Image (cartoon, rainbow, N blue to C red):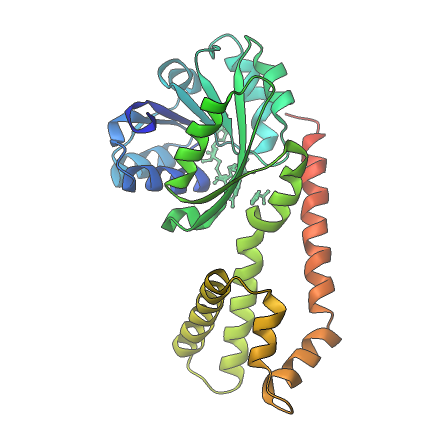
Length: 273
Ligand SMILES: NC(=O)C1=CN([C@@H]2O[C@H](COP(=O)(O)OP(=O)(O)OC[C@H]3O[C@@H](n4cnc5c(N)ncnc54)[C@H](O)[C@@H]3O)[C@@H](O)[C@H]2O)C=CC1
Ligand SMILES: O=C(O)[C@@H]1CCC=N1
């Protein structure tokens, strides 16, 4: 169903590129993908590296695509949606990945009885290891959610949540890769500080995060149980964990996610451009 549809992206930035790569890897023909972006360099890059069709007219995407992905910044939502008010119809499905912007705002901006699904993906979608949550708007049916699930399944795992949980999703997995990259960078710096060459330090740090995540996923244990198995009595790990807890790592991360959740809620109420 998805692979035979025409999928359009309004906004050809980082996330659109990640999803498009996943779609193509999943078997979608590039000619069935059309992307609009006002920036010539972005259009040229997407056309040359992914062979998708590009345009600088959002209306062209809105006219041609059966599934329209809104992959612009939330601050652009109002101006872009207003301009497409009379172009997008109830026969099309609108799939928004914009942080903070509710399905109601999109439905009200577009009118025409349009069906909207909202999603929060993350950048590991670029390597088919994404985590995405989806929720349906007022008029989205099971088939619409199934189509969105099919799309994001090509780039990773998909959870369906209630729309009120989308801000929490944004704070945990949408922004989450940035926290993990900071963690890896710090771990690598610590290796270099203690005498390791940078490439070795980064390689060890990356594989440690990847391997620990895989172990956790496959073992089905609580993270604390696995942490305990690393911590020998009187050993090195418990000494390091003591330092992390003195620095409030756990509470700090929870505060960081709270800040992202708060910002996601604020984005819903921004004075849209
Ligand atoms: N980057 C991330 O990790 C994630 C981003 N998102 C959401 O995805 C959306 C896009 O984010 P990114 O790809 O990171 O941003 P980006 O800045 O890389 O992409 C936005 C693209 O929209 C284009 N654009 C600007 N004005 C436009 C217009 N009037 N019409 C059409 N295109 C226009 C820009 O040239 C740019 O290429 C945002 O709403 C963000 O909240 C969601 C999950 C994760
Ligand atoms: O930082 C942001 O606003 C977007 C949403 C989730 C990840 N990046």
